[in-house]
Length: 164
Length: 164
DNA sequence: CGCAATTAGTTTATACATCAACTATCGGCA
DNA sequence: TGCCGATAGTTGATGTATAAACTAATTGCG
Image (cartoon, rainbow over all chains, first blue to last red):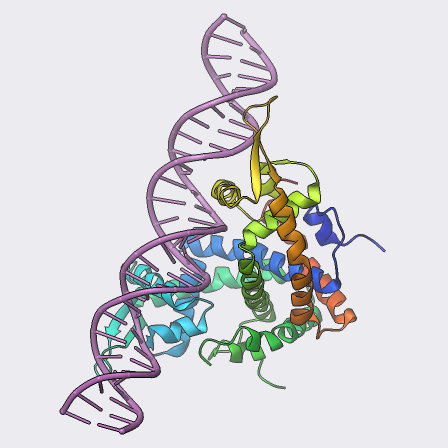
């Protein structure tokens, strides 16, 4: 039985209290590492991870979305979304459109430039996915996805889905 | 064959490009959800996640650590660590100690209050781990840990370990 | 109709990540 | 002895997460 690798990675002196703790820290640590790589790629295209996610959502929808609907689909909390859209608009990736029927609502739509940037990002992003996760077999990836899904299952209640 | 659940969670219109993409997004999404829960618990004790991690490291070490050594063991980038320690010190959880031999170095040590807070956090934290991950079997947890370790394996090179 | 409760979105304030640039100290070396 | 490069840490600027409080428009209901 070898010492857990994460314990060594973190230079942790004490062993983990439980398998649950080790698993939770593994998820957080792995996510941080992956995030660093994606962030770097997006930055080459003038985007942050949050901004990229919003553009992806808008492209997927094919039609303008109200601001709060966008917030619902990201981890972004409501107040944060305003500045996020501000910066995306200022950079020319999206535009705000006031709704005529309900003047409280503000729709957001991607610009040509926003869509082009997404397209340009596709090949390097696919390559990065391969680099980061290509060393796992397809079966391993499926199993990882299944386990993470199972982890999230009760979380959706606990966290109280914003939206949905 | 059912549609992937993450695709539904995200209200994603298009399927994933690849299993690699789905796995990467799964890790990020799961991490975010877990983080929210931990953040809430820590906040009840006047700590943020980053601050808790630093206290944990200091307690594990049993002796004062230089500021940059702390930064090395967290995901925290060097400049960010200053304010983090500032706030921990201001809240009375740690103290700064100048090194006599090398006056560039500043050691950080936990205070009594810092250690007490960690101790108080132990039971509720263990309980939270159980709540969040207790529905996975021990074998599933081990497998999840193994797969995430495998994911991180090449990442340590790519990200160029700060420290170690 | 008219007012209260809701809803969409913004503002404000604190905390953190990140990069670039800076200060202060140390070590080596001519 | 005195300077040069390396190292420890901080400062400043931008972007984002989060909570609380706020504005503006809409809806529901007597």
